[in-house]
Image 1 (cartoon, one colour):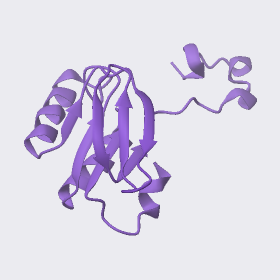
Image 2: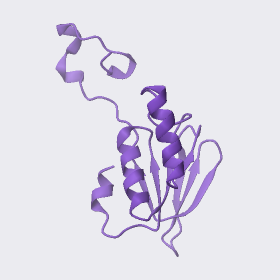
Image 3: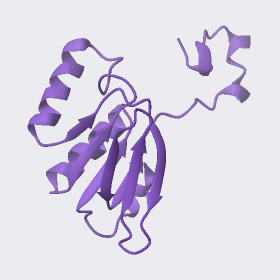
Image 4: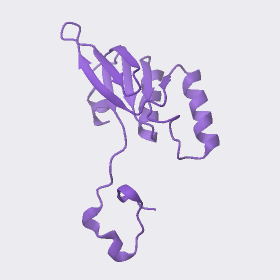
Length: 133
């Protein structure tokens, strides 16, 4: 997602990959500025681990404001570049394809970098993937 801050011009068409609040914010900002924006989520909706009312309302509002949401994609399979047009094609794991994209922003979650903290030794419980529970 750091690439968002490196943009020198407003893209005509953007794809934001991720379902967390950073992906949602970036998609909303781009759409509000006039970029045709798509949000790619692995499962059924963004912020799915938040309160249902919040994530469902957010989903409705994003679509109302023109963001196209690609759901149940299981992520991105491939991104290819057309050398002549400099536009990208995004192929999703569910077979859907998004063509003629100027910018792809990867804002998917990251694995926590907490291994060196020895959290288990101080009694902090963790879920799979080292997330604090």
